[in-house]
Length: 141
Image (cartoon, rainbow, N blue to C red; front, top):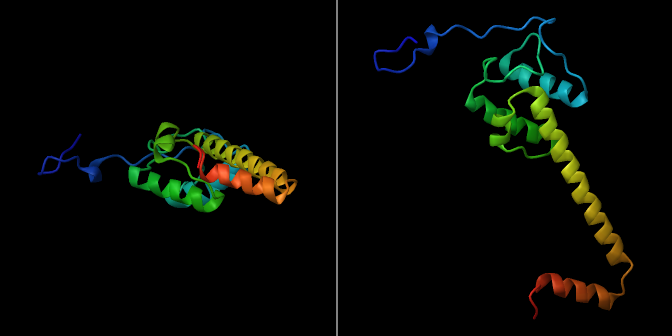
């Protein structure tokens, strides 16, 4: 690798990432992969032909841009993805799997809350007060 006079990698001398041809890449297979490509990665990396199996970093993404990806996932899907998880699965398909898993977890939590609300709705005021007291003081008074 070419170094600058200060001993750092000369990024200007590095070759530009190659674009995958339309036939060489894997197209988005569902709505989540399509949204990630269209609304997050294509504008960020200026992709012409997104590849859902292409490595984000090999295709020109940087760690700073990865933080932007995670932030945009939060804004677009309303869920939090850990940056470390994206680093571990830096493809559109990997990110889509993380989104699906987080959505499923959120749906499960919502179902549990709805079940608790339904249970409370069917309680008398005294039973609800006792339950609330036990939640506020789980180890006793």
